[in-house]
Length: 151
Image (cartoon, rainbow, N blue to C red; front, side, top):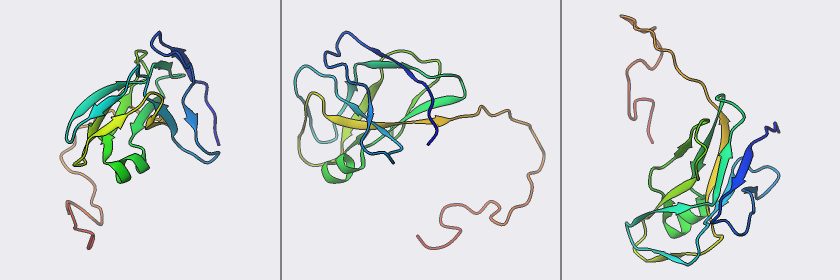
């Protein structure tokens, strides 16, 4: 697996000073944890911004950090990201915070140090748009939702 250097800063609210971590050798995402002093209750359909107590500096504008839901937390408890995928741009060096939403019918208690999201570092490219009158023909063409077969 490729490795890149990502600088990390532990913020004042982070007393544990544990960096994000990969749960297994083959993990694509590293776990982010809740950096909170006391439990937070997420009521059904409630959204809250949860601090992680860290800031990062990506090695260049060729990379972005992307925050995803933890699959077990989302499927078993209904706790997922309120914006589906969080994007940490290469030039953002402030605290990483995770917007969570409770999609279940029950209160969820979020505890200090709980794994709340996963962060994946990915290469990115900025698009340069070229205006054209026609686009090349493809097999799919303008066929949209469900046009390639049954779900």
